[in-house]
Image (tube, rainbow, N blue to C red):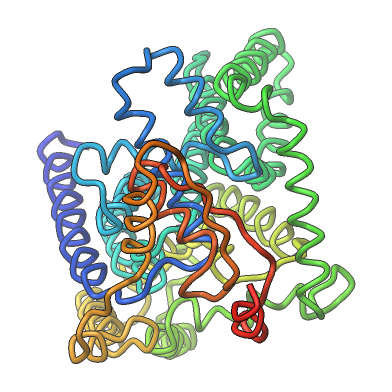
Length: 463
């Protein structure tokens, strides 16, 4: 590919990233509620890491040691570390904490762009990036703070290196090493995330060892892959492995106990994500492009089969990853449409491929792109999940968390206080108060007294 074309494409990617920052900044500025339970937990880890980075009295080895001890559960430290670096550069606030999701968005965009090159169509990567970046599903994740988006970014990055390794026939070790490192990044985001790549790894293994002439070279590749993976995860995993395994088991049991009807033997468990595809893509986008697809599919001049046959190998490879993910998600005891995020970039690539394909005379390429842009705009403006009009018409409410923590700090300047929290509501709970305490420097330690939304008022009176 000529250098000037590559430069032009990357300039378009930079423009997409710049626009996504503006969109995210707008949506985040209209957030009126404090972080809820999980969000508060994740943000407290971000602020704790920021405090360690800002502490000038700790030398670098001790800082690394403390950073690795911030989280010891099945939620790895990498997401929090990258976000803490982001807000250290910019500003210690919730706004910039949410905006740090741009780090993971950029990784996803670049990975989608490079994966799309396997389709030999320079427009697929650009439009795949647009679909991903301005999808309401993704904007909602970027306007929140969970680890699903970061898991998606490192998963699609690892898929990129796995793909390069799978299709690489030269005697070169670099892709096996990069695959080991990128899989380790997935592990450091969420250890269970590496199970998304069980089948792809088996197929890489089988393909490499089909050729007996390169047997010893393939053994070296495998050793380097395992070695690079182990070296990256070793400092964190081997000091916390018991707790990581136990919290993973507890998370599984939570899903079994509290999500009735989604057991392994239940049909609902296996069709849950297919049923929710319209919700993931947005009802408007799903409906519009389903109609276009049906019309073109039954067009006399349909060329869809020819298009797919030309990219048979890459389709098969992506299907392996999709199948692995879908089986795993269906087996999981907890169900939520955001768990489908690691395979969402593939949907974006294939929708882009469809938009850039001349399938019939009914819809030209440019016309489909215009429809896409219009449908994205309609979805963003009239979304019920992120309602711009309601937030613009209402004054931004003031969270009491800052004042609560500040008041305790002022009364006990020379020691760390413990705040016992009885309410367990979305607005006020142990986790978002702990996040605020961590943001203000960890002068207050927050602990939970078990309660629930129905009984906390009565218990609070006798507390």
